[in-house]
Image (tube, rainbow, N blue to C red; front, side):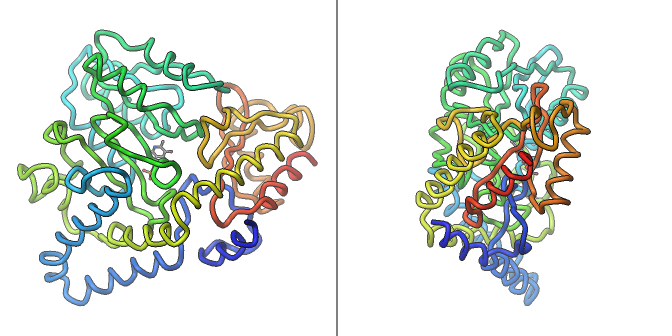
Length: 386
Ligand SMILES: Cc1ncc(COP(=O)(O)O)c(C=O)c1O
């Protein structure tokens, strides 16, 4: 396994000597996929009018159809956006919400989405409610109960993360969406990390809107997100940029939001080819086995815990930082400590890893991707134990 991972590292542009344990942040794109994006840009520039007006509409739809099929969906329900943030913003800023309405999210919500929710609240007079989902967390039931108990007669929208950013927990979104829909609540799932990390059937989630990134776990170039909308919900939303397609329906409105570089979206084909050459299941299983091995190694060395059991983890995990031993023993649970630990790991050990502060505790969030091997995690375990 590790020999294969070693050779796969050459498929990426990652710097030598770095233990890159933060695939979750921005992904990392294989050379072949970057070359494909370059090639699309060249084709565009060879005859910009022909490309933009004749080729792009068809190619974009064909790529959307292939991506949708990978996600269990139909191409006509999926549009490309620049990133998950743009998709979430398009939904939150389109829905008609009135003063007194409540939007429910959780304490694990991605920080930029929390800011978007607060912005919408100041614009519309709605209230944002955050369900407190425990962390560490022991199982699905705890998550479902924490969310469901915060539904109220005023809840209009549930904005829920599929795989949480600071804590790396897979939320049981299907169960939660079902409970919300039974109460007539609109459901938006932020699945920024899900495509490629877990086996995903988007329509089966049962949400009205599902947003994802291809530049994280699907190996696409940056600026590649998507927005899926259930057929009956499509007329309720519009892109953040209104352009020629306005009034023409979901696809027309989102497919053209002004002149822009579509190369990242078109290169999704090559990103999916990259996944196919390894096998989506093989890739996921390999990375998950590596991550579970890494959790055992690190928690044993540090005498700490992972924040969630394996059943709630994909290929990322939050592990508590040891504060009773090692270089950061008795570090206060503050953002200053988090930054100091991050910078120490990078500057002294060339380990790139996020150090979130969550529930008054410092964590590291490990990622496992095809270019990682167990030695990367041993290096992390040693660095903070020393
Ligand atoms: C849950 C979640 N939502 C949204 C985002 C934002 O992704 P992007 O910066 O690609 O918009 C992230 C990024 O890590 C995330 O974890």
